[in-house]
Amino acid sequence: MALYAISDLHLAFNADKPMDIFGQHWLKHDEKIKDNWLNNIKEEDTVLIAGDISWSMKADESKQDLDWIASLPGKKYIIKGNHDYWWSSITKLNKMYDNIKFIQNNFFVYKDYAICGSRGWICPGSDKFSTKDDKIYKRELIRLRLSLDAAKKAGYEKIICMIHYPPTNEKFEGSDITKIFEEYNVEKVVYGHLHGNALGRVLNGKFNEVNYIMTSCDYIDFNPIKISD
Image 1 (cartoon, helix red, strand yellow):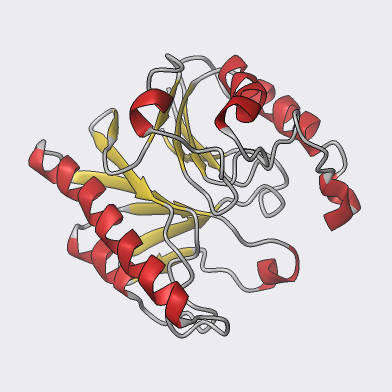
Image 2: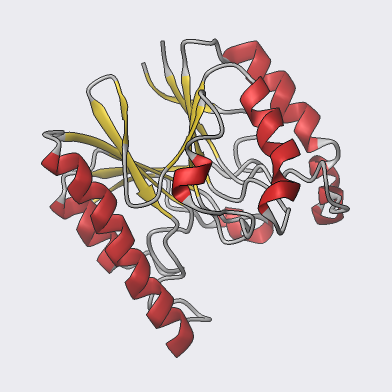
């Protein structure tokens, strides 16, 4: 029984969105993910998937992608990414599968850990941060606290968190998001979102006593990484 993580699957079984336009390493990337998954992950394992699941725009269109994930071994916990426009009512989503659960203002459990999370957003101080971004960012802070508060109220002290966006800006400055993780004594944070040239500068390791783990598919060679036994 082990805990794995991956993000940015960018599946498109029901959409015309070939990922190899972003580089040859993305060619048939779904097959790479599946092969690696089957070679490493067992039914008793759990996988955290930190957003950007499907290119589908609507809930019914995303089902083929979600069915594909459900067919793979293990239990999966998923948060929303910036491209997950198909994301619908959290109540409806959490009724769809026995082995996939979706996090939004709630949490789930792995052994004695609470698994929390939220999408996050581009951080203040980033090159492209705008007034519009500020509004979304502050809303995501609320959602992140709701998830963490739910875990704390249930008595959980050990927490692993997922966030789709990087928790800092490009200068690796602390943010309201990193402060929240520190406030709640989060042990590990799984995130993704970054691709291409941005992979040359990632936060991967300890930052103010919190362990950050970068899991974008193309960063981990399309192979879910083990983050805990």
